[in-house]
Image 1 (cartoon, rainbow, N blue to C red):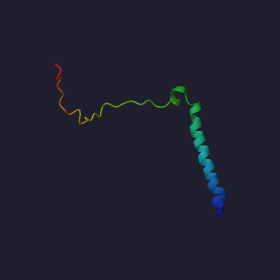
Image 2 (cartoon, rainbow, N blue to C red):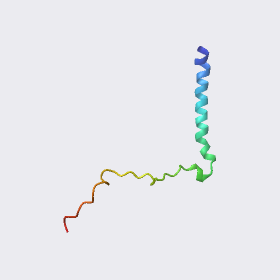
Image 3 (tube, one colour):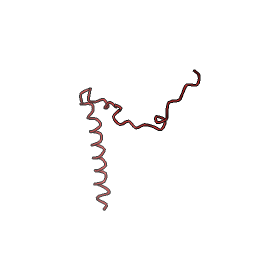
Image 4 (cartoon, rainbow, N blue to C red):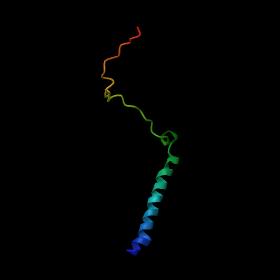
Length: 63
């Protein structure tokens, strides 16, 4: 158990850190249009009415 605690566990931690560092640093080598975050688009296909949408339109009492 001491071998795992002294050698294997720290090696696994360093390997995970190194993998994360390489994965994050890989963005440098991507083309400029791929390095940007993906655009967020609103999807209009799934429209769900709210309770206020179901109410009849209010009449304008001023006219």
